[in-house]
Amino acid sequence: MVNLCLIAYHRCYTPSLGATALIHIAYGEDDFAVKDFVARIKREYGGAESGDSNTVRLEGSKTTPREIIAASHTIPFLAPKRLVIIEGLFSRFEKQSRGGRGKSKAQAMKDWETLPDQLRAMPESTILVLIDGKLDKANPLLQTLSPIASVKECVPMSVKGPELGAWVRSRAKASGCDISPRAQRLLIDLIGNDLWILSNEIEKLCLYTGGKRIEESDINLLVSYVKEANIFTMVDAIVERRLAVASRLAHQLLDDGASPTYLMHMVTRQFRFLIQMKELMTQNVPAGAIGKRIGLSSGFALEKTTEQAHLYSMDRLREAYRKLLDADVSVKTGALNPVLALDLLITELCA
View (spheres, rainbow, N blue to C red):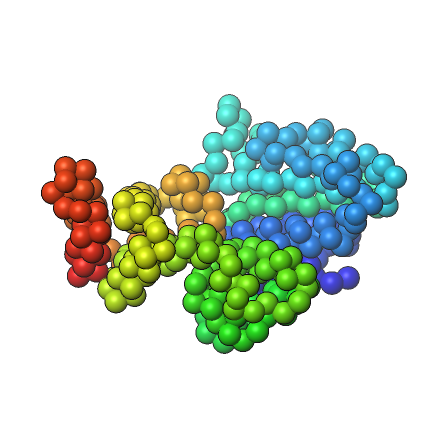
């Protein structure tokens, strides 16, 4: 059987492959690869004939062994397979988790000790998929279920240059179309290496072209999206103090009708993330928990913000935030017009 979690330019290590392929575990920081893994499982095992009636999703933070057994032992309705997806179950058993409430982790695990034996007895018509974020290898439930499952650890990779171009071409092919070299370069220039966004846009483009080759003109039709993608690229350029790029993108966005106050808001938002992340880092909060604490669900956005946080001291972040507040006040009081305030702000933050 094809190793479904291995997708182009994502590392999904397979530390163990149990005797059965009916149970799959995929976890790790690369939420793109984890979600893509689930999509591939659904394509391979679900089928159009299965429909939603044979796909069950359980909330890992609340589900019980009894509920999992009931769902996995149910025979599919008028279809060969039944898909049961559980997200976030392992996180309950992480060291920093408070999911035990009134029970020690050892006591909490007692409720789950018989789960492997019960899952071994589930019908071959059931495909059970458990997905999660970054986990400690010593996670007790992960250790308990790994021997009976195909386990994938998905680790994000930094994709750049020719590798990113190859990724775009392979993703387009997987979505049922082709992309011209010029269109490929334009898409990468506009979006960068955020694989979540690239993947979503490639799928839209393939649908739009009806499976034909994607050209530059097709990408230029996505004006609203291109504008949004450039906003994030502009914000990254400011945070990383690349003045020329930041200024060029800001004026391109302004020419396209973007509001200068909205652009300042997006810059402020990113610096707020950076301050929160820096503070949690100093408190030794585990990396896997920081994203949830600050409200960043995308693995790529979290990785990017983590890299950017290392570029700043807390004092410098506070100074940057004061400049953002000063710019906001100057616009609201009429001391500066919004475009000039944005220009001055970019220059100061990139200094």
